[in-house]
Amino acid sequence: MNEKDKKKALKNQFKQQELNAFRQSLPISVDLFEQLFDFLDEHLDQETGVDFSLTRKFCDENDLNFATLQAWLIQNGAGDDAEVLWNVEEQFEKL
Image (spheres, rainbow, N blue to C red):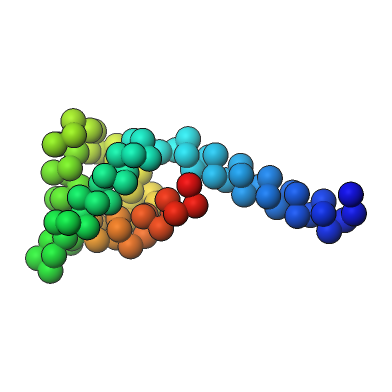
């Protein structure tokens, strides 16, 4: 294996480790996140999205711990419901 192939393999290994760490950090399943994204997509409008009220509603309807999910969302770039779609959903495209 030449130097270029070694670097490529190390880069791929690092990306896989990052992906595994991201998956392990999830407070809910990927399926529930997809349901949350769909829920927000359906219910978000001009008057909503400035806080986490829709995310709280989703958690209430699905018996999920809102505080844990909100803390994770904030840590991963969301300051409100709209940013869950803008900043967090794109992180799931690589899963």
